[in-house]
Structures are given as C-alpha cells and as structure tokens.
Length: 293
Image 1 (cartoon, rainbow, N blue to C red):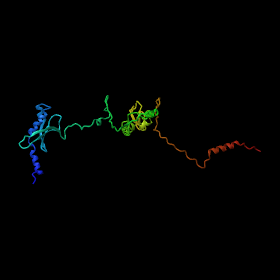
Image 2 (image 1 turned 60 degrees about the vertical axis):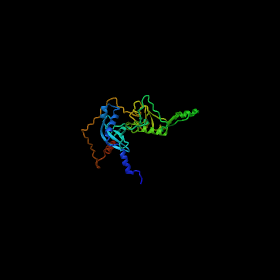
Image 3 (image 1 turned 180 degrees about the vertical axis):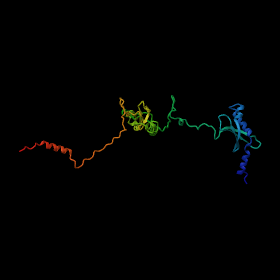
Image 4 (image 1 turned 30 degrees about the vertical axis):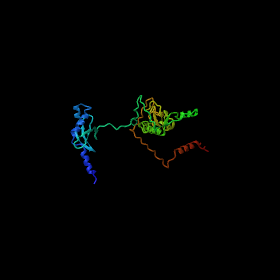
C-alpha cells in the first residue's frame, strides 16, 4: 500500500499547513502599519475598519478589513498570512487594498490613439498618423516628364501619402452623416440643395460628385465641406416676393346683399317676331299708293 496521502488526506495536510484563521489581530496590525505610510498613527488606525471575513488559498489565508479612508468607498484591506506549520508563527505575506463590487475605481485604460477625439487637437499639439494607417496609401513617384507631373498635380498626387479608398469612404460617410449632410434639420427645411447653388465649389477627385465647399459667408456651412444634397436658406436661387411700394387697401366685399338672377320668360309660339313685324311695316310704308283712275 502506498505511503502517499490520498486526496482527502492531502487536503487535511494542506489544511494543517494553513495559518490559523483567527489570527485577526496580526492581520489588522499589518494593515494599520501599511496605512501609516500615508497617514499618522491615529489616522492609520481609523483607516482600517471592521473585519469582513477571510478566504483560504493553497497554503495561505487572507483576511479582509473595511477601508474607512476618505475617497475609498467600497474598497477593503486584504492581508495575506503564511504559516510554516505547527508550532510556527504566522507571517504576513502581503498587504494590499482591493476594490469591491461597488468601489470607486478609475476607468479602464485606453491607448492614447483610441482616446483622441475630433476637436481635441489644440494650438501647438502634434498628432502623428500611424505608420500603418489604413486611411493612407503611398503617393505617386515623381517623374521627369513635365506633362506627367502636371497631370499628377492636377489629380492631387505628388505627396508622400494620399488617401486610400478606405480613407475616402470613411470621410464620405462622416460628412454625409454630419451637420452638413442631407439629414440635417437645416437641409430638410431649405428651399434648394447645394448642388444647384451658385456658392457651391465642388471638390476635386473622386469626391467631386458628392461634396464641395460652401463659399457663402452668410451660410452656416461657409468654408466647410457640404454634401450635394445639403441646403440652407441662403441658396443663390432664393427669390423673395417684392411688395408694392404704395400701400394698397384690401378689397371690401359686401356680403349683406343677396342678388338673385331671374331668367326672362320664354316667348309663345303665336307671338310675332318683333324684327319681322317692323320690317313688314317698313316695306308697306315704302310703296307708293296707287293713283285714282
């Protein structure tokens, strides 16, 4: 039969090697000593509150105490004790402060390139683009042909890096959904769109068909990139109806009198036609009377 302890026997051995769970005074003294590094003796003793229980882990035992120091709501002192076995004193292995489920803790750390937001860049600040920025691609290699260089400059090349397809798409979506896009409240109430406005200056390149710059100083989009479907009340085709320089009195309608139209009676069939009768009389009076024989 093997002399090695079984699972239950091993658990009993490990339990015997743990420090006494009631060594609370030693753990509290260690917590007070740690608190004294930042405060005086009296304040340190007050910074360690009531005993909150403990937890065993392998050959160690951790005691928890409430942290009553101002600004540490929900935190607790954790003092881990070690023990070499029967007849040996317990020793302090670690003293730390741990946050509880309702503790006030700092937000999760976020890398700086993820924390930067539009509008954060100030005067004198530098914001380098990452080496693997997916918004940019290598630019055009210079040529000795002047004709080629003229075309390259015209289409926006000649730089170390230029916008990639992803960068253009990302910018187009941002502008389309931004304050100068077609869904803005100003655009929905405008009399016309920027694409038909005389103050609209189209962009060059592949974004020309969808965006431009407003050149109307009275427009809320002046100097900004605006979508073709954006619009405002300063459209170049806005015409205000001109009123008369002379005050014209409003027409007054008299509704107090009701006019009733009565149709004349129809002529009977046995009545002679007045025009025919007159004509007959004229004919008879025009003929001379016959002479007496």
